[in-house]
Image 1 (cartoon, rainbow, N blue to C red):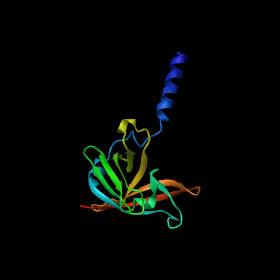
Image 2: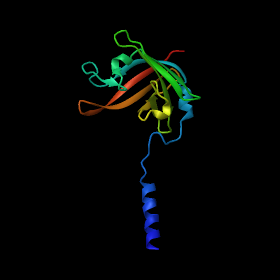
Image 3: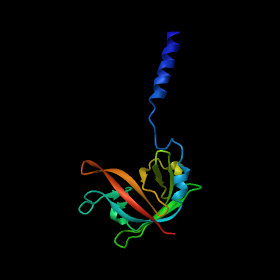
Image 4: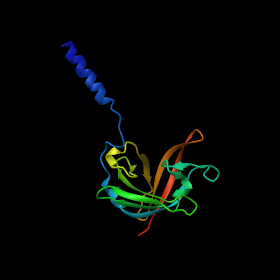
Length: 157
């Protein structure tokens, strides 16, 4: 009997302490539909961005993302983006994405791989969403300090 009680208590503790993951929450379909379409990153900003370099999404300097074009398809959570800055190496890749109920934008860069084979991704906060613009905010370590990197999106059509 003691063994059964201990097992039940242990199970309750495990389930009660389960951490919440960005990927195991319900979707915010309203926010997803609102960003459906074609977008451009108008600016990328963070404190010290005028003197420091920062690599965004483990791909390129954050300044290379200014002017990049993004397509979001909300009915299947697919899309793509293209880096097209003349001073940077051009790059284009498919993505898979969603927005959860906590207002987090979760994205995987597929780059020649199927989504279920990609084991890592990015979680950014969605902010200031309107019909013509929105922001994605990424928390990164800049010179030993957690800093917000703000990607400002503008609708293209």
